[in-house]
Length: 536
Image 1 (tube, rainbow, N blue to C red):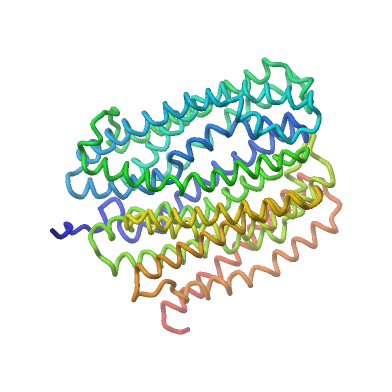
Image 2: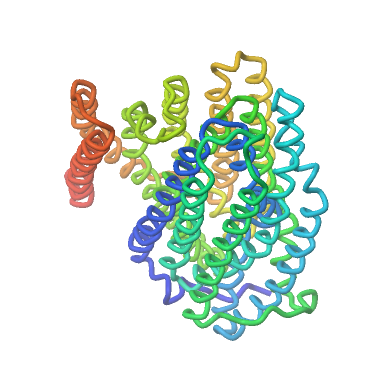
């Protein structure tokens, strides 16, 4: 029996892609900037110490564990199913599917949270094995175990938040879903600042009181709870909020979601495993977790306000076109999304690559103001500038595959990326510690390159004989990027010769960045107008 015809729902008209991308990018920028600030504040308060390493790695364990069981894959799998449910049976049908999927996912999350509590000592051992002194290592393992016990409930809370995000995106609402993580970040930032004021900064492992770890663990969990509550509010606003229910095995749509989630575990688990390994290896260098975690924060911040923002906005339209077996619309939507993603990513690549050194100097605060650490951070940021573009292409490619209910391609890409990342990281550990952190960030880039190649290859076959790429917008974007180079280069030279403090440097870099972006946008609009007008 042929699938019922489906077109882009009223919530996702074709002209809304750019507007929704801008909405996601704007609110995600706020969330990611606060996330970056969170890492900076933790580093400034705790310093380049082994306790900082264990806390920075330990408090993100629940998020990593949640990502293994669902992560971004939950939205990629659930959003297309909810879009189809609305097109067939209306919002009520979407609520039924969401209720049964929620019951299944929250049950799994609760079991996993309990398992995390049970294996907390083993997790703590993996995060502290690089501490050279046996006494400090034992102390670090005990404190990390305690921390994991207090943050374990976050696995359940992150699942609640992710279900809310997927429900809002399926109804074409993106603002609150993208903005809510900022509140989580601000709550934790306030807690860390308060802890630093009360207990002191730069504490070594033997100086850390137990109640400090308990305070930080509880505050982190409270922050995630507030985030989850906001996502539930957003779900209620779009009319899809429902109580989790059992019986997902008797609902074909919910069963389909569960099966695709099960088949797609590797899509989320592989990059999470890679990140966990990189953080553990970075713990062999004092302050190393800060550098690698900050590199990850910048990587996600830039990609989520550019290419990944586009991919989230374009997913409902891709799902509607795929569900209606409308190959022409699917292909044109994919090419438009890829063009927008590249256009958004190129200027960020150039600006961060050029300003990597002053940016690292601005980000290293408090106990972290050490020349060697700043130099390594600058080199890592330059690599991240490229990685965010490649990672964005990987993300929008796998979103398109998931919209076609293809989970095999994204899974294979993630598996290959994990192998490549771990191979590069293993080779890096043979290097002297001076260049180890840069090598670990290069492993991120290598993995994203491998994954992007696989998803694009699979997508090319899926949409053939249509073109995979529309070269026109990419040529215009390249010319616009070249036009902004003189402005950026001038700003770099000015900050080099100016005898200014870091605040003045930050203001100068911001102004130069805005001027460079203005040139980029102007040339982009002019070039696009000429293309549309048929002059070029």
